[in-house]
Image (cartoon, rainbow, N blue to C red; front, side, top):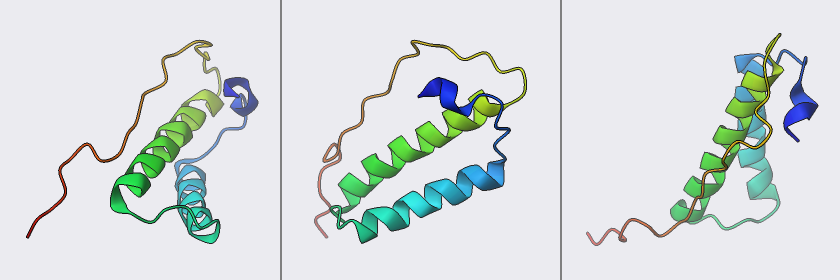
Length: 81
């Protein structure tokens, strides 16, 4: 997947638009709306789009086996007001 973005010269505005569209698509797909899930989901989208932005820059060197972060939800205790 990393190589699919080479030479595309993705702009920061395009990256942001894609991330925003993914958030709306999560709603349309009926993905869980709880804050912990959405936070983890959007963290992954933000990470991926920033990586795509970087790899699409002219002359970018793609790191083939870069580590992938691990996300989870429910890490923070629930708010008890």
